[in-house]
Length: 565
Image (cartoon, rainbow, N blue to C red; front, side, top):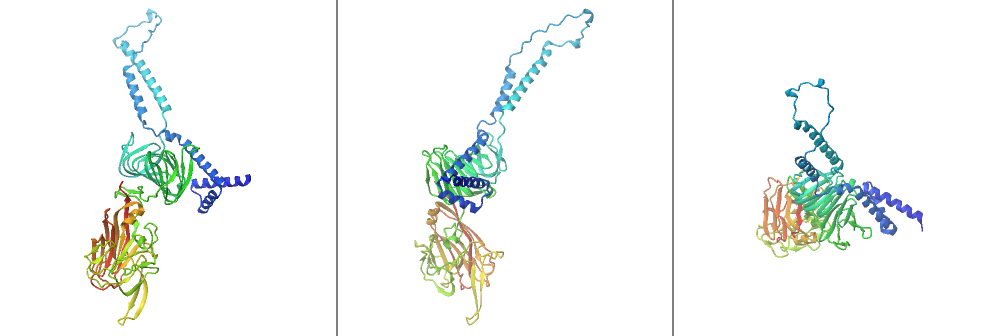
C-alpha cells in the first residue's frame, strides 16, 4: 500500500476543498479535483468523509440558531410579567412577630404630638414594598440570566411582492428589514432574501424556511432559488432529506413532504448529500441543466427532468414583475440555437424563397419568391418562410393571411441575424460604383462589435413563421408574451416605404407602415394564449420597390412561465 501517496492525495483534497468553500479555488484547480475524484475511488471516499465532517461541524456551530427557530418566541416574557402581576394581587399578607423593646426610663419619655402618630398599617407598607421589589428584582435577574440571546441577524428582506407571513413576530415584516436566524412561514406572495454573504434566495408561497447563517439556510417546505456569487461558494440549503452544497451556481430546490426533494442546477454545479445518517448518505455532483430527486421514503437519488421555469428567479416590486427564467430569444432560434444558447449573431441565412439555410447569408438583386410556404428543415423551431405578395399562406397548417397587399414579389436578402448589409452603389447603366459593409441597428449609439444586441434582419419582401408548440414542449413551460422593437435601420441611405407585420395563426395582431419620413422604432408586446401555435413576423415593400428596405426586429423574445398545474 502506498501510504505516502495516499496521504499526499488526502492533503490535496483537504486543501482544495477548503479553497472551494472559501471561494478562492481557481478553474484549473477545480478541474484537477474533478479528475482526481473521477479516477480515484479512495479520493472519492475521503472527499465524501470531508463533506460529512464539514456538514456536521456546521450544524453543531449553528445549533443555537436552529433552537431559536421556535414558534413560542416572545411568550416567556409576557407570561413572566403576567404571573408577577397576578402574584402581587393575590399574595397572602405577611405576618410579622411583634418587636419587644426594652422599657425606658420615664424621665426619657416625651409627649407625643399628633404629627408623630403613625398608623401601624402605614408603618408596615414600606416593608411590604421592599419585599415585593426585592422579589421582582430576583425574578428579573433570573429571567435575564435564563433568557436565550436574540437570534443573530444573517440577512435582509431585499424585495417582496404581495407577501403575507404567518407566525408571531413576522406580521409587519417589510422590505429592508433584518432577517434573523429563525423560522419563517410565507403564506402568500414572493420574497427575495439577501444573505450577508451576498447570496440571494427567492422563495414563493407556500414556503417554510429558516436562514441559519450567512452561508446556510433550512428549507422545510416549498421552493427556493439561489443566486450564489463566486465569493460565497459553499452556500448550503438543508432539507429534511439532505443538503445541497453550492459549488458556484444558480440552482433551485423544491421540498414536498409527499414527493421528496428536487434540485435543478441552472448554472455551474452543486454537491447533493442525500440522507441524514452516515449509513444512508449518498453524495452526487449535479451539473448545469441537470436535475435530481430524493425519493420521499427510500431516500434514493434518482434522475428527473430539468425544468427551466420551475422556480421564480427574479422579482421587482416597483414594476411588480416576476421572472421565472430567461426569455426565449427568437434571433438565437433563427441562428440555429434553442433560444437559450446565445449563439447569435451568425453569418448563416435562411432563403425566404426556398427555405434553404446558407452558411454565408446571400444578398443579391432579382431574387423571386416561389409563391409557396417553404418549410425550413434545418431549424427545429422554425415552421417555414415565404415571400409575401398579396394573400399568402403563412404556416404549414395552411393559415392564410389576406391582409398582405400586392408587392414586387421579389426579395434581396436572406433572413439573418448578422447585422451587416452588403451595400452596392450602381450608376444609371447598372455598373458598380462602390461596395461597402454597413452595420445596421435601430439606435445610433452602438458598439463596434456585431453582437451587441440580438436582432433578426428581414429585408423586404420576406416573412418567417415560428412553431410555438415545440418551444413549449422543449422548455416544459407556457409562452406568455412576444416582445420586440422593430423599425428601419437608423443609417439607411434612402428613405423608403416599409410595412412591418406580426401574425398569430395567420391573423394580424400588429401592423405598422414606415412611410419613409420618421423612422422611430416601435415597441411591440403581444400576449400569447395557450391555443396560439404559429407566430409570424414579416416585412413588405409598402408599395414601392425593395431598395434600402433594411428592416430589423431587435431583441425578439418570448417571455415564459411555468405550465399551469
